[in-house]
Length: 291
Image: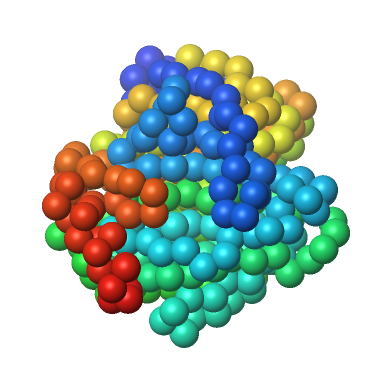
């Protein structure tokens, strides 16, 4: 890829903060790494939490995530390996397998479970929590179950490819390819990017969106300032119209962006509302069986 001129560089995003997640547990003792939602990175509006789970030790995941409630936000699960079954009290059910995704809008309230359908082997993936605008926190719950074959695999050229879960990406032919996720308030971009050794790519990212990259395999060179980001590191990005990626030895990473809401947030456990009164009401409604 030729060196960009100054005008192009001025439009490109760069790394403004980089760090690693911290060990955590959730559900019935599932071991994971909390990337967003930890002291060093409490949130990144509109993103409330990002967890990475990955182990071939069944003891680290076998307990799964039994029935638990949510209100006021969306949960996004993206599987890299393994099998996990989703069920909820609205009658939805789906099987998450390698390469699949689930975008669940909790809205006014839902009770769901995500349980392993394996007793051995690798279980690996991500769960992202995305806030909802105050005006949509009590919307009807919705569940988007996305099979691996429904996620387009886009050739970015220069040895780079991207699976497009949400948002739109230009492919090597100049066409625009959109992901299967629809009607999400924060207008997200969610890509799983694969860089071959020596690959490079320049990806359009909506201006004004908060954005981050998390490198989960290999190492990548990120942004106009070409900062090296090793495996297991999240890089928070500045604003800009595009992101430049490269890798000498090959890398896999997720690139995620969303429109900031810039609204008050009151959160506790599985509920994310706009103020303390709404938060208390969420607990009262759940205890009363109104989910």
